[in-house]
Image (cartoon, rainbow, N blue to C red):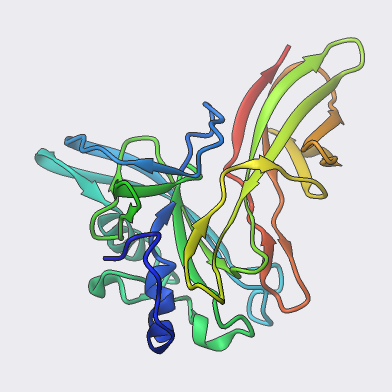
Length: 270
């Protein structure tokens, strides 16, 4: 276990992927700017969680590795469920989802994609819960062994390029009936290791410009737009009704994500 602010000695950079497995969350509907939170225990007999896996764009995955699985964990008596439990169950549900390192406390490879195989020496697999980074206590990150999952959580495992990758989220702001226009706001957070001081830094959520926002209904994609400098975007819809919205993932020239796909947000335009 590592403190978020502990300095990493140069000789130990080989364990960077372990560092990058420290958890991350902000409750999307609350839209707090915090990118970290102190987790609390909440024993239960059943939790249903959405697992998102977002990886590299390769010849095998020309649109980028992406999996989304709804997982239900149960117990005859109330207990805490952890990210590790979620991953083990997800792999049992989907035989194409393979992970290395789960039993060791951190994930070094997913579907064959490893931090050793990319041009980003400080890249690796990370996870966030509802957009933020769980901590056991102040400045002490939770691992997959210790990060709690609760009913309704969204756990996002994504391949992070610490120089470039942003974790995104989107909030519905309102609907102009006469214009049939919905407005949204996009914010993003990132994390990185300072190459000089080797300090681990997590940025809070702030406005994110230049990303693509897509809106869907039961028929499929119905509108899209690009966020401005304030993170705002207006999208014309067919009319009032129920929709979902997401930020689309974007990739750089090396096939690594510039920004993640956000969790889907449901809203009613009226």
